[in-house]
Length: 97
Image 1 (cartoon, one colour):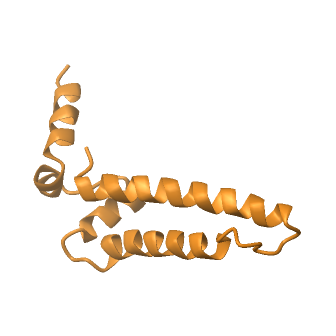
Image 2: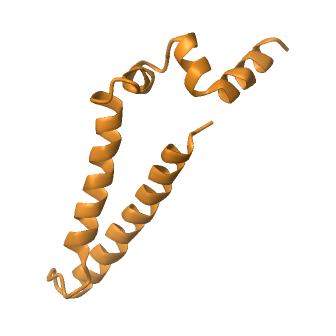
């Protein structure tokens, strides 16, 4: 359903959020000081990843229709066929049962 770039971003965000949580707990345990845990760095990395995701949805013309899908839950059939043909095939098979 997702292309390799989307999968990579999802995994990177998963690890970044886990790192933010982990380093935040370490920082909290050190009395609120960073204590060398790298919390600020992991937050910046997570922010860059989220900003990349937003850029791809909003500013990149080839993926802009995906923004409508995220907001309204719908995309044009032609766009889905071009970008997510496997998913569209699954939807079609389920609707013809």
